[in-house]
Image (cartoon, rainbow, N blue to C red):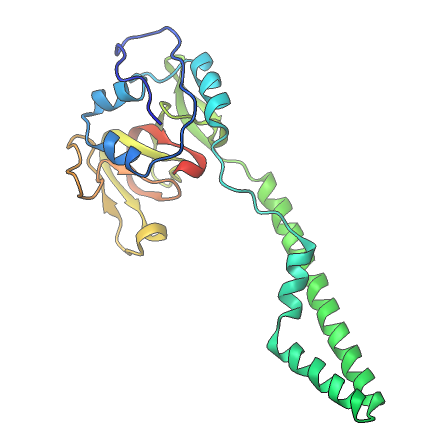
Amino acid sequence: MTLARSVSSRQTGPVVAPNVASPQISELASIAALEPDLALARLASRRDGLTSAEAAERLSSYGANVLAVHRVRAFAVLWRQVKSPILLLLLIAAAISGFTGGATNAVIIGVIVALSVGLGFFNEFRAATAMSALRSKISQSVSVYRDGAPTRASVTQLVPGDVIELSLGSLVPADVRLLSVDELECDEAVLTGESLPAVKDADAPAIEGGPLTNCAYMGTIVRQGSATAVVVTTGART
């Protein structure tokens, strides 16, 4: 996807987001290679963020900032119960008993298998349904600049070009290019497995092929400091 190449840093008129193209892994790297103000221009944004009209128009083009929703499927839960090797062995044993005249043993084994599968399915399906319902009730908000002023908004409403604030303990809500930092460190263990937080620097453009130290990734956590950043990619494009 490619946004407008340049825009005045004090522009107040609406900026029209283009149609969505196939996400490119190199998009974040290409933004990281630019100075902060040039990165904003590339994303057709400004230091004081987008207007509400711009954000709404981009939201209709890019969609909500959410990943795939996990749905509880009864068949999938049932399949996880019946694919157990132990249950397969019990069914084979029941079949052998039935063919060799041990009908009573076959019935007993069959009842045990049915009860095991039924109870396992009931417990897992109930737990998965409860977890799904709990997840749907959890909402996360972020400090984002709209119409020139900071406000709280749902992370699902973020779009490329939004300028957000990150603080200690924040969950990074999208892939972002840092504009300014104050001793920022992010825990990226969920992506890299590294136990130590990564130190971030907003000023230096990223070197081709090098680490994107001036970016933060969706799902990572701010362990120290604070920052202002511009959203580059959202949802499944992160």
